[in-house]
Image (tube, rainbow, N blue to C red; front, top):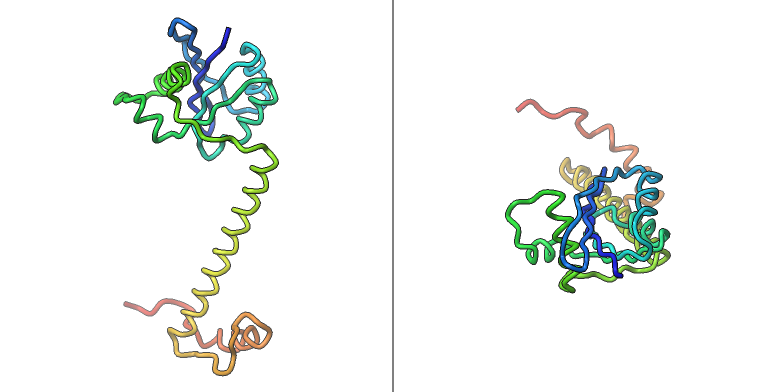
Length: 182
């Protein structure tokens, strides 16, 4: 018999609701996101349970633990799942129940779950791109501050090369140290 469970995940805890073949749902169970507590709870579920969980900012480790416990996670698109549930009253238990019902009916708006190694590679690349963007933003702010006070670097094409850094060290004392009274 197929065991279907909905999981409404938050940052600190998750709420689980199971549904049987007749459509009857269990009482909601709230599980803290202490990793050991989470693993213990997953071990109490029937082997091979199918668990619908929303794609949130922290689903990676939860899916990893579900797979390690021998369950089959299904990643739901949260926006589309909410539309399909059609609920105006929103509680954790209703969301978990709604996810379980959608999975039970075969209407869960599911997203592909990449393998763990690929998720890690993607996250590393995303982090690198975010840091690159932050670096560029800081460089633009420094250029703008120097331009704002007419301290243009004549003959220096790269303010962040060796000559540019020497120039910045010289002109930094010419920038105001505090805002002008307004």
